[in-house]
Every structure is written in C-alpha cells, then in structure tokens.
Image (cartoon, rainbow, N blue to C red; front, side):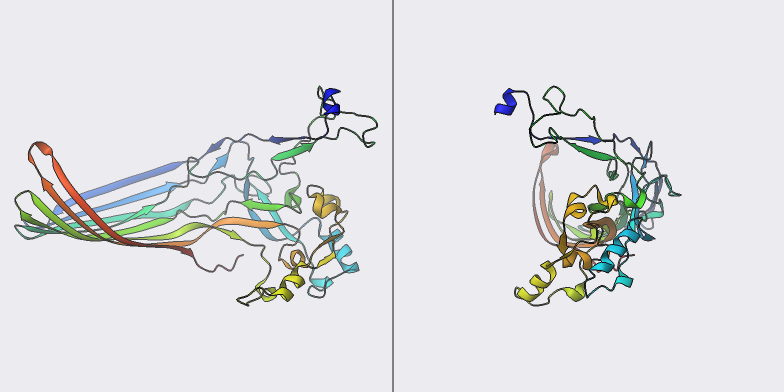
Length: 363
C-alpha cells in the first residue's frame, strides 16, 4: 500500500497481440431432379459439389502446421549439455531436437493455412413408394460436408503475441525505475512473429492447424412408413442413421512413449517415481529458450520430459481428421389434423450416439 501511495508499482505485465484479418473462399453448385417412374414410385436425385479454400491471413500472421523432422536451431547446444549428464534411457547419440513451428507464406510454405479439399461431392437420393392407398414408404440418403471457412474456424498465431513483464526495480527496491505514470520505461517487447522460425516458443506448448485438414462429412439415411389409420389421423414409424467421418480431433504428438508407462489398473508408485524423478536440465542457459523461464533457468527437469519425442516443447498439438461418429434412432410420430390448418402431434425417439477417434500413428 505504501508503494502505491508513492506512485510506485510492484508488478504487472502487458500482452501485445497482433491483429488478424482472415479470408476464405467458397464455391459450390447443386443439380436436382424428381423422376416419377410410375404412378406409385417417385425418385429424387441430386448432386452437390463444394470447394472451400483454406483460410488466409492478410499479412501471413498465422501458423501453418508443424515441422517434425528438421533439426532445431537449439540442437547443437542442447546435445552438448546433455552429453555431460545423459539419462540412461536416451543415449547422447540419440538425443536430438527435431522440428518446430511453421508459418504461412514463410520459408516456402503456402499462404493458405491448409490445402483445399477438392473431392467434396455430395450425392443425395430419395424415393417414395405407395404400397396401397393408405400406406407410403419413404427412404433417403445424402452426404453433407462440414464448412471450415473463416466464419467457422480460426487460425493460430503462436509467435505473434508477446508479454512484457514490469521490472520496477533492479536493486531490490532501493531505487525505482518504473512509476505508475510510466510503468514500462523501456517500452513493450515486440513479438518475434516468424523471425525465430523453428525456435519459436522453445520450452512452451505449440499448437497449429493441420495443413492436410479435410472437411468432415456426414452420411445420413432414413426409412419410414406412413399409414393413415383414420380420416386425418396418420401414424409414421421410421429409422434414422448418421455416420460422421473425418471429424476434427485434437492430437498431442508429444506424449511420453507407452513403453515407459504403467499398465497396472492401480496406482503404480514405482512408475510414477521413475517418471517424476528430477534429472539435469540440458536446456538451462541456452538463449533460444528465453521465452520459457522454467527451461532457461531451472537446474532440473523431470525424467518424463526428456523421454518425450520432442523434449524441447511442453506440448505439440494439432487438430486432425481422426474422429468418427455413429447415430441410430427409431422414431414414432402420430399426427391428428384438424380444420383450418390446425394439427396435434406426438413424437417418440429412441436413439444411440457414439463419437470417438481411432489410433493414429503421427507423422
């Protein structure tokens, strides 16, 4: 309180985030025809085609995927430090820092955040058949694609934001260089943007869009039977299904390998202790890790962090087309129609829904 009354701040920070101006293109067409094959049988046939361009950012202030193979700029310094105190599980010759973040429109990368999917054909079929004057059977099938344009998805901007921490005193409060009137006398630190390349956010978590992202699609089909029970009273019994394919699922590429994990159904203390044991930090003092004080300054890290395939990052994730879903439903509808357009109806649905992802092996 005393420092506040004297107009002297104690701590604070300012985050500077680049703005964003996204754009995406979309084109599509649709053809449809109704064909009355016989007096009792009618077919509905249609085809839709959609082409959606990947999102672009006006000034390429966005990430486009992750490089998993190129040697990271911090590799030489980290390997030299690790060779002094290697862990038994990773031989010094096998300790390599690979990969990092990629940027749209930079280093030969396209401006689009992902490649357009040019195979989005959506057929639709339907039929109606009159079994008798009181009974009609209807069935249909169609494919519907998920839109991924700028109004539905956002780009990631790792590297395009920067935090400036307040440093009010450099001599433990004997003198103050910052005041409430001028809390940041050195100004704000500029974001690195794409200048750091693969060294962007070393020691921190990375996330980006998947450059081979595809439009997820749904296959829907249904069959129902309508029966007139009495004048103005109709009963409908049907089946409805939906199959989702290539759904977006967040995938973490930087998990501890399964060979080091326990398969015990109970807490495995030995495994927990093994993975959480502190080992010498090979990244300490390497300037490229300045964005991560924990990696830059700490003497130790956990063994688990060095066993990961990309130990120089806390996380490495993208949304990939790995998910699928099932939906099945049985439906019953009873409707009573009255004069002047009024009606009363009752509906009952029994359904089951499943959504999951398959095991994906990464790059």
